[in-house]
Length: 415
Image 1 (cartoon, rainbow, N blue to C red):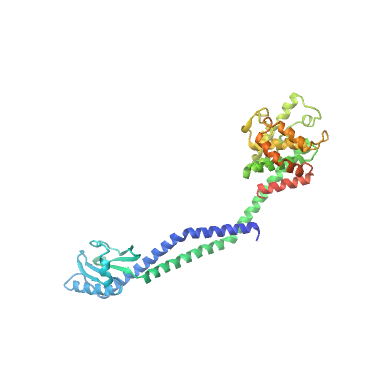
Image 2: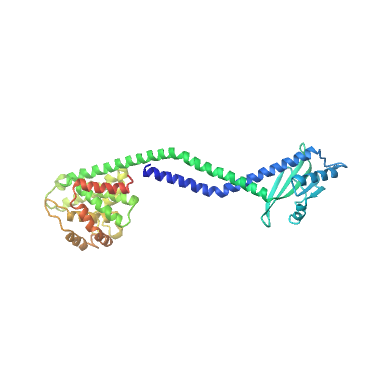
């Protein structure tokens, strides 16, 4: 079983157990109510059957005698207290067992009977004793001809039986829930695997498009074949992790770092590849690459997440950057992180026209720009990372830099 499948199995199993645990009390209560309903229905049926067998009539001269005989029979088989009433509510008979005599002192009369359907009441008496009261109308066709009302103190054995029945039903329901979860595991796991594969394929496609755009401009603008993009994206992501970026914010940083100069695709070669210093007019044209880059990524669906870095990577902490002259925390954090990573890589990289600076010299240059070009807090955080970053990435080949960034991408894009 793969780690993904194991995780899904644990999630599904844990969810099923949690739901079963949450359902335990209400299911037991419903099962207990159902058990009481069943016992009550049996008591009602037996009462009605006995009255029918005795051909009871609630009127006539023999009615009180018949009612008393029926009450005595019911107290012997069903109840501790039995009252039988005429259709008008007059008491015809009263019978009680020895246990019922004590019970009579604890229960209030129900009042004159006025009902057409049988029902019951169940409650607890002091000492955790269970009391049942059953109310049964006697019908002749559709006409109520009398009433039987019985009360019973449930013996401990019957309460235990009812509780055991409720627990039996509850355990079967819990088991059914767990079995359903087990039966759903395979199809759900298959769907989740397919979904994960599709998501991974989509993300890999997006990453390939991001890489293609980055490499296209790198091959126009530099002689490193795109290694700079891999390096600076990895440096920015490493700093981003150190300041707590994760999820979509980290994805924005990585995508934006790789595509930061994508707008240079729209800059004429005469300006982009000019070996000497650009004049003011040429510099104005060069600076339009930021807006061009924003337009490119804004129309690229998923890659639009990198827009904050593309739009803000030339802004400066003191507000002297371009194109908007943003200052301080008005500059998006991902853009501030990238700006620091970009300059550090430029200082430490070897170019045909310059030698790389040592780590200490590069850090001195960055410190000198703290509070001017760079966020002072990020400078402090970066100082703790600089040694490891320098050793890992500065002299890395394109393949090595690509591998480092791929690890970071897979980590934060869930590939």
